[in-house]
Length: 457
Image (cartoon, rainbow, N blue to C red; front, side, top):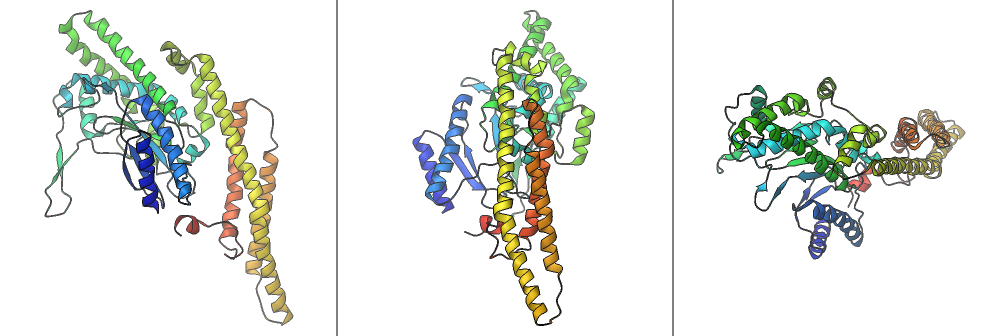
């Protein structure tokens, strides 16, 4: 059924002119990946929206639901998107193509250095473009990149840029061979860059992958930010080269080396090839001065920072008023989403979970009464356990409902209140509901379990 669904999705997308070529299982149960073929940024953004719409509509025909929520199940890998980002044209191809000897490829080094500088200067802006309540659950959860924006270059390019920083470029590390352990197959060439799934902004051969976009999000916001950041960095490099050469082509090579060295000295803190999931990286990132904006209320104020306003207004992309309106709308969406979810938590707890657990409590009490009637020895352990959990659930729901009465303050203050107070209270209710699910008789539990949702076809 899933395969039939995927095939029909591809047929429908083909009719719409959306090129897709890859589909395979992902880590979580019933989780799959689809890969559109690269195309120009505006078209890819529109096609991405069509892909999401098509996935949802076709799923219904097969009696299924396509979940684009970033973290629908606690404890199970969530979903996201990889925004593959490259710059080029029909004549030059990709300007992020290093070739076999990247240390000699001045064009590539300039554009790659521009990307490094851009992410270091505006990493907080990138984080803000992927800030949503559901994506906050996913980022940094040992399955997706952390909220710290860093650049992964791979062993070869990291070595080249380290040489540039020191002022002496000698060469590039060459490709090795990968022995896959099958005698009948020859060793395969191994990319010296390799791959790092823990990095939010990773170089992967001839492009950068921005891996922090949420699965339900449009890629437009991140794309606009990347384009503008790159424009500013390339503008900076071009200005520096013009100053240094003063129109003399003979001075260009030396000027390029000087500019690249300065960029790496000023911005190499953002380059990290290690494990982005580790606690050690979080401590190291703090030492390097890299922002770690873990929640949406932490990230969205960046949109109206002086630096970001100057960036977008300088290049005629967004005005200060447009940035402020976007920040306000995104914060309001955050508040409304969490308010809706919190009200649903209260309703489910009061009308579904609590009554089911009380029925089980009644059965246990009736069993105890029957055993007492025939003078049979019995223990109250199960009954007392369920009763205690029910009481804790009721207290937690009452506390959450009280918090939802909160009013006043601007939108940012309200968002912070939802993040700091309401969200933990929702998790508290969830913990007692999960505890009851583990003990209440299955025939009395009205909600589908993880097993039923994920593993029973």
